[in-house]
Length: 279
Image 1: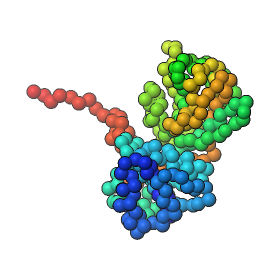
Image 2: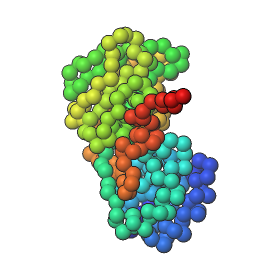
Image 3: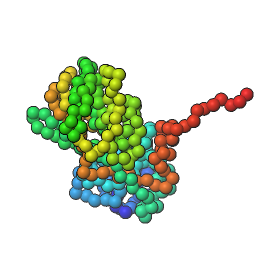
Image 4: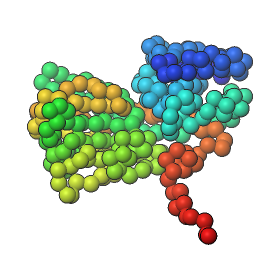
């Protein structure tokens, strides 16, 4: 099996763990690229799997690094939560012989394209989690109009607006009160951030539609953020367009690790109340 070894080498312990794992990986796999700084251009290379060491942020960066040439990702958690990167180094040592022979399944997940339009031109970004338009210093309200397939759907004032994929629904959107979406759904969730009204609520809509945010008014510090990475400043009359990407993100699932198991273990979803013992 041909693999990329990617990761967040800036996180404490990642390079050390990669060094410990490398002999085992070379026993079972052919390492095409070993890049813990995520600096190499992968567009002209091919692999069967990308092993990503770090946390969920490292997986998001790896997805962007692979761009429009995605290969399935197996994440090893060396961070805190590890929702996408749900294997420990010990788990990897146990399962790598089976993974190397193809004993795993791959789930496919929605990615998005975000186009930032302005009088100066258009820039396109590929992402996996979410697009966030948000107010910044001096933290005035940001006013925007939301269009869905060209139809005006909402006028919004508040701290910002998130457009999240199902994978991103358990990230920033969840913290802002959005719903959890099944990871393989073909849908976006639109989540207002601190709306200045009593009626704006999260909405789940089809990923087959195009979503356009038109900035009506914002302070100088308003920004566009994609997958937690600040892209640039926003200005009045600017348009941000979000649509389904032509590629999908592949996530490797090994036996014994499931989505609902991760929800229970990592986010305590569905956990019963902790009743006090009878006296």
